[in-house]
Image (cartoon, rainbow, N blue to C red; front, side, top):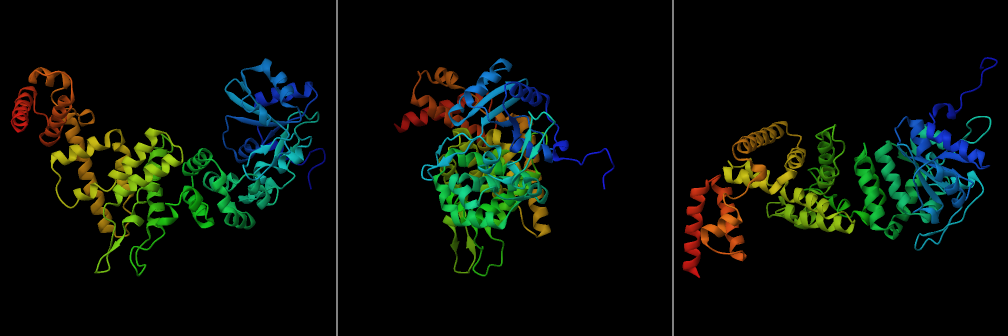
Length: 478
């Protein structure tokens, strides 16, 4: 029993309301309107997670919202047709959305924007109960916490449920199924059985969602603290078969007896090991994580069982790089991101030639030059690709890569490999050969670059001699 004169603690007491939110609340109250902190902002505050951006909901219509906030700071109205007005208050980006009671046509998934007059109805249309909590900022008697659908209890249990029946919620916006997997990764929660069942039964509807929105959710999932859990949920419910079919395709045993780990389990382990090798100061590395996830996707297409029953995947890195490039392009990633990930997939197997025989300095140079600025990521990916339980084999692989890294370091100090160029540039080539710009200059440049890779720095005089020798042979053969 609580002591006389005290009041029971409310969830509102656990939420530190930023000063800018209080200022907004005062402005809306002065205009006769309600204002609530809502959604992920409230959820993260209860979890003690930092959140620089703030989300609000209100009974004021968008035009009224704009009139209230325009004197406070820079505003944006790109979402105004959907009821959202943005304002920047100091370092905070604030988005204020009018109560909604949307209806979806469930074909194009575009909502018919309908404004509501009830906070409870607005919260019902949100994705999950833990995102359907609100904190009043305009109540005269202090902050009032609203949780009509049990979001606080679900947050405490670490379980995702939907305010409305999940089939209805996911039919309104199928992306919510993908978002569920993202929250499993980022928040470490699980999904309720009825939510999982709805995801499984409705997975095909995710095909209605734009590639850009899918890409955003997949990347957020992959950058979370528990990406393996989120990915396993996608595969188990069939969602991955719609948006990332290369992943469930990896669920195959290495031999017909099923005695070895399948490629899917190996891939998830490589991802986790790559994450462990990230620099904590740099934060999650999207390029590295996508490369780890896709590094073996060429194996199903290259799998061959020999007469001795042994399975091989020859050139799976070449096929995998092509498949990775295609998938990432379909997901609308930028050109450089696509090239970086696919190049890591292409190069991840090259090291295994090093451990079977001593590499020449030329081979080491090519490894470095082909990796370019991706070399630190390639180091991490290759080291992560060892998932054997054989400690002796794992130690041997690690030692071999340690040796390779030392040789790379030695050559880098001697030759500045990161910026390797031929000993003569294009202008010098034209001067030595007495020719003008054209295709031949490029041929000569590539010849000198190959020579530089093979033999190391030649020096200007030796390079000029080699260039003249090449030119004479070329002229004699033409």
